[in-house]
Amino acid sequence: LDDAGNPKPETPNAKSIATVLAAVRILRAKNFPQDGFTDRVPLLGEDRSWRYRLDATLSLPGAAAGDPAPVTTLLFTERIGGMQQLAGSQEFNAVFEIEQPLVDALWSLTYTADPGPVLPKP
Image (cartoon, rainbow, N blue to C red; front, side):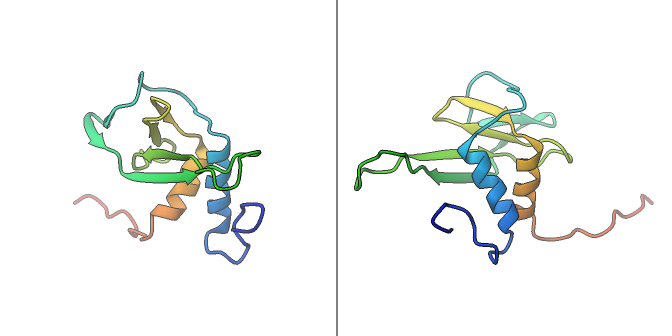
């Protein structure tokens, strides 16, 4: 990251990384599908574990040098269809649906293999 906390242009997936960083700086939710944080979340008719974890170290303005920087942990489900993904935070006691730009950015960073075309049903 550069001095402003942004990925350098030559960084692979720089645009997706910048989108994730912006989303973590100003966390937003499309909606809250349940009350409170849980270790497992209901997805597609079954309870599932969280799939991804993002630990973000926050640099606070005015913090004294040497003070430990707070770390925020966000957990994510896998992408559900094309338009939905859930995030959870034990710290904020919340499970929420993330906005589409973050869904797309996480997809480009976590999905590494093209499965190829869908095969026709026999």
